Length: 252
Image (cartoon, rainbow, N blue to C red; front, side, top):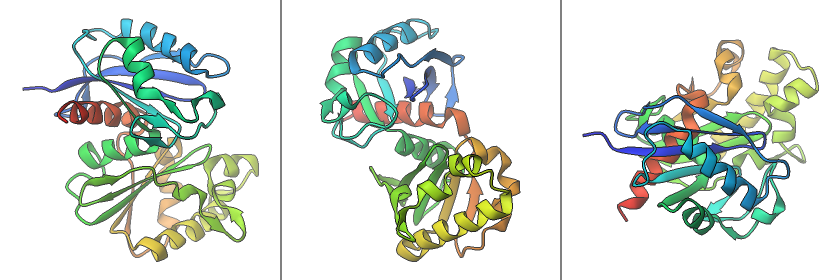
């Protein structure tokens, strides 16, 4: 029997959501997308979520909602804010959305949600040991798993290497900003992933983010002990992972 939840991915520019079968990892509806309101304030985003959910076919009032968000999230409280209003810092987002939407809500860090999707349904499925998921985009998001269990809120994109927060050198945004070729960017990625490997000795790296579509341009250039694979769920990862965790949280 299918387990169904609503997954929502909140970003700095857009908010997207869909109905998800969390048993199979498949979308049961088309994705609905609405622009993130200017300023990204909590109450404004809550109002947009009401509209978005009303537009998702089959989103009945009894279904739980999983929301992934660009912040460290501890027990439903957003402890940071990236590309949204600083009003989120220290806010009980679970309570805000539960009250606003009138249904059970579970909020999670966006990279953690993407990682959950890959470990449950994608490139990390049935992988034992230590798995590190990275998302290469505006910054570098990370999610860490031990034997399939999430260790939440790792911020390994912010490792200091060569005296700088290294996502400023190795993110996809840095590649575009500095107009780096694939080879030059791969040299920076090599330094970043080699540092992660030295610190954690993972069994598998999963590389996500939009650039993972072009994984053949840079992944073969990386020389690491661990296996390195591209993410499979890509643009749907946040929605899928958030929905899966919404179902899990309702069991507690």
